[in-house]
Amino acid sequence: MPADASPGPKGKFIVFEGGDGSGKSTQARVLAERIGAVLTREPGGTAVGARIRSLVLDPVHGEMSDRTEALLMAADRAQHVHERIAPALVSGQHVVSDRHVASSLAYQGVGRGLGLEVVSDLNAFAVNGLSPDLVILLGVDAHDARDRLGSDLDRIEHAGSELAELVQETYRGLAAADPGRWAVVDGRGTIGDVARRVDVVVAERLGL
Image (cartoon, rainbow, N blue to C red):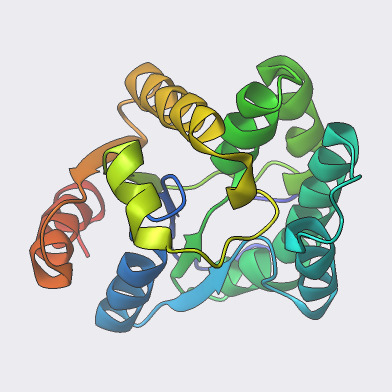
C-alpha cells in the first residue's frame, strides 16, 4: 500500500493479465460484477491515463521510442494507483484491473528488450509499494489470441506475432516464479467456461 494511504479496512486487488486477445478484459468485467468490485484498466483508468492511452496505442505514433512507451505506461500507472486503486482499497472496496505492472514487464521489459530489471525499478517507483493480492493469467495460444483481434489493431498490436510470443513466454515465467500470487487459468472455451474457472481460483485464494 502506498506510504501516503491512510490506515483502514482494505479491499482485495485482483489483476488480469494476458496477451492481446486473451479475453482478460471480458473476464475482468465479469468478475468485478460478481464480487461488486471497482473495475478499471491500464492504461486509461483515469482522465490523465485516458490521454496517455491515446498516445501510446494510436498507430499514428509509429515513431514513439520503446523508452518513451515504457515511461508513459509507468506514468499512467502512477496516476492510476494514486487516484483510483489505493483510495478504493483503503475504503474497503475490492478492485479488479485489466493489466498492471506485469504487462510492462512483459511488453516493454522483454518484448521491447528494455530489460526486466530496468522496467521493474521504474514501475516500483510508479506504484509506491502497492502489489496485487492475486494476478490471474489467462492462458490462450498466441496465434488463437491474435485471430480474435481481427484487423483493427492498435500501435502495440501491430508489432505482430514475435512480440506476442515473447509476451506470452514472459508471463509464463513470471507466474512460475511467484505461484503464491499468480494463478494461470485456461482461457479457452466460452466466456462462462472461463468465468467459472476464474471463480474457483478467486474463491480458493481470496475467499471471494
